Image (cartoon, rainbow, N blue to C red; front, side):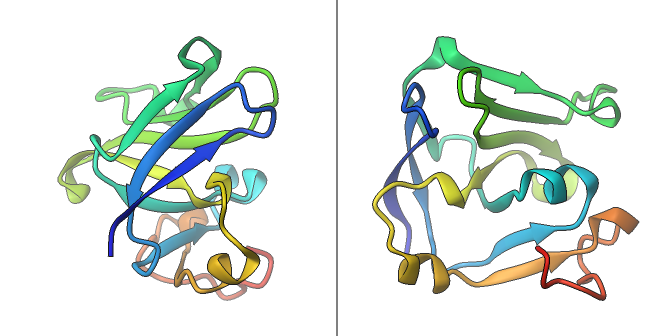
Length: 139
């Protein structure tokens, strides 16, 4: 069931609200970006994340392979503390534009709440997002 959750970066400079179903699939990937940032994402629609504060403190990182048209993945993070909040992307197989919400930045959830979120593992390092990698324990 989709619910509205509040989220923020570590220093509190950026905050938002997001409509997300935490009983639905979330994803952990072993690609170089996700593995290095420990990114734990849930895909939501482009209107499901609403920035509340800190628009001037939100930075945009695009990996070199995301720079070609249609400029498809933008990772948004706080300029002050560096915490990634969400990504905005475009993939035809996702139906166009989407957001990938970093579940770890949602406020007010208990460890038990986080533990109940189902995780699907992606083998992004081999560009096989629909298959889990052989080892997932580090994700």
